[in-house]
Image (cartoon, rainbow, N blue to C red; front, side, top):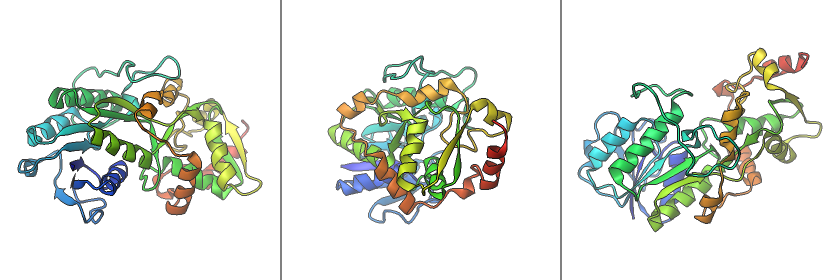
Length: 323
């Protein structure tokens, strides 16, 4: 198959590109050339900013187009216009954030989606508009590309080359040992998917021409389960988790921006980490054991100290305060 990936050189797109090439497909990558430009020399690289001129797409055709970098509906509109019917099946990488806050765990793909009120922004992604914009992108995708459109809604994506460093932070923090500040409630849900598993599965769905909407998630677990699984694999003897409740952390300025993957006391947001994986697994998704992801991240990924997560001295200060 001839496959076009819009993006494809950073994290999720990078793994999809690797999976497509491993499966023997002819690959084209559309990207700006700013990240990972030397990756995949066997692929065709088209350098363009999707927010500007996409005319270089007009002289080509593909069997499938996988869009990993669509955040605003106007981007889907302009891509559809540039492809002009020559992009084959369209695959849009959305998010579980597209859903309205679920009322209980285990929500399925037909659950209500978020809506945006007021003018639709054309730039500036925020926590408040991200999910609603993904919903509008999904709607635009179906309008332009029809019912064969494949919509993939992942939860937190982990694995090698994760520029967000969210899960990577916890692997390296627990590997350092000592007293570890554990945020929020131990039984809060968290749901992960390794980018490599999602990538392999998406390529398989494209090969089968499968449309529809699917979660890309492994079964959910508690935050304590996740931290304890990491600790059991990487932490030195004597490491201990010290839990602090949301009120304490927020009172002292410790937010989800400092402590990644924590919902910062937002129970509605936390329930988005309980998507039902049944349909995806029935369609062939095979989540690997978390231990495998942990081992690869520790081996391949440096500690994300440059991302502004909780520093050791600030962690020690918080741990010294009366809970």
